[in-house]
Image: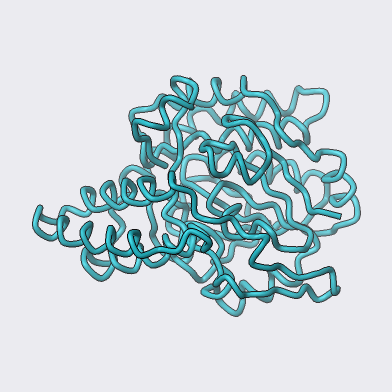
Length: 329
């Protein structure tokens, strides 16, 4: 989502790094799956790294500038956001910090969608690439593998925050990055046993590439439910952003019931939680969802590009790697 100087020393030129105002469940929150497949614990969670603080504040500044508020209002909001960050305990997850900062911004700056124009432009930019990307998958030796790899690379298309980044160039650079942990055989096994997939969306722009993977899942005879954010937050995709994307009609579209840029179970709607608990297979896109759900037991596969050091560390891969991370034994 955002770039700031110290990331540029770690990150391949031309590939947008991402920040996420994020938030996860409380440290003591525990989830038991209906099949008894385990729980999550404090030790499983992503803790807050030093890099997370400037990421969150940079995201806050970007959102504040786009909100159109004056300097005094923006200054006041950022001061309060910085105070929240300063008081934060390192052991807590960054997505929970992001939830608190997001609440400050909405209270101080309003409830609008400052990224609406950037999201629309991002979707349009990637839609122009759709025919070539679709053909790339169709003509590959293993269309499912290629659709997954393309979707992971599509996580670099953070065009809502970086509209100046050329979509084709960013995607091409991301596709040249190595596969980090790539649990493809395990994914195939789970997919073969599942009749349906719960697909957790991430950003606008990127959602067009996700559409290709969703179409591949449908072609394999799977039912797909697509979950998007419950309200505007940064450049994350919402129900309103899907109108021009062309998601197939047979896909059921639901909301997480939360306007955080990552699935945060305690603040999700009852309907979403019911779907989540019943899901045979969950495909979770992007770093925000990884931050929120990492450590959960259950049929969750995380698909993303590791665009920052903290997430790369948690996933056990190098920065820039494409990741398909399946459930632990």
